[in-house]
Amino acid sequence: MTDPRTRDRRVDLLFDARHIRQSGIGTYIRTQLPYLEEAAARDRLTLAVLADPDAVPALQPGTRVIPASPAQAPMYSVAEQSVWRRAFDATRPRAVWLPHYPYPLARLLPGHRGTALYVTVHDTIHLLPERISGQSRARRLYARAMLAADARFCRRIFTVSEATATTLKDIEPTAPVSVTPIPVDEVWLSPADPSQSPVGGRYLLYVGNTKIYKNLPLVLDVFAGLAGEIPHQLVIAGGGASLRTLDDRVRRLAESDPDRVVVTGQLPFAALRSLVASAELLIMPSLHEGAGLPPLEAMASRTPVLSSNIPALRETCGDGADYFDPHQPAELADLLRKYCSDDGARAELADRGHAHVLARQQQICATAAADMICAELVGSRT
Image (cartoon, rainbow, N blue to C red; front, side):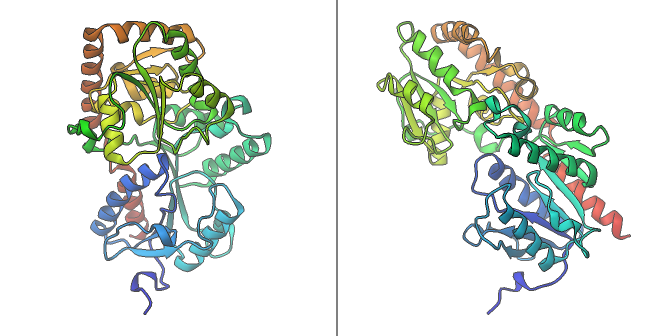
């Protein structure tokens, strides 16, 4: 029998949740989807969710499911455009919300040109030079073309930081940008179970993937130079990282001191929470970010944070972190010497971070994007 949630009928809003299993964008999708369902129900709007058949999220009974075809279409691919075309045809939506920035060419086809488009731009890493982004010239040109199309044709573009909004305004000054920062999941503010941590003893922590712009070699280089001065291990966690999948330079640096450098790979959530809460310091060395959740999660866990001083991280971390120039290893080394040897300084930094994240939680409206979309849909039908 056909699932009643997949019957062909027009919907008010189509939301793309295909990447729900990923780390950054997946967190965003998992956070926004309940708010969107609540807002749609409140405003009597019909909602459809586009999902891969093996990753359909838990949804309210009134939410329609649109199976992605083809399934597992990579982000930024031709196949992804085919997924959107079929989903547009199946739902004939009044509006579409995509939680990343490639422009859906289906909107240019007859029958869909009146569809209101909303996208979320998390970062603009694909615009940066290859030495930082790791992207070829062709990919960078594609990204710029997609972002330019968004800026010209979207009803609204959501960004998770003012830093990303500024970059979009540089591309198109009239881009309809709304800054809607996302909060830390409240679970990070509750005590973690220390027995769940896969690492014991004193350690410094990096959480994230190993892409070039994450600047992980800086941390490994500085740690190697301080190995004789501090007793800590360095733990690298998250993003599915393992020594097998690390890039060559990171692998060489990690393998140069296997007793002191621990690579955990991706962890169950309870283990990751415990690992973050038990770390003496979290280090965020990025050359570029859209916003940066790991330092906020650390602050919520009362773990002190050392962060690169790029604009997005200064915006996100405020006065809750201590900063270093990500191009100056000596600055990070000096901070590590200070905080690894001074319990009082670490405690003071942890207190600052926790106060910052609590204040930030109060200032952010987590439902802002969903509320804006639904309000505009209600306004356009009256």
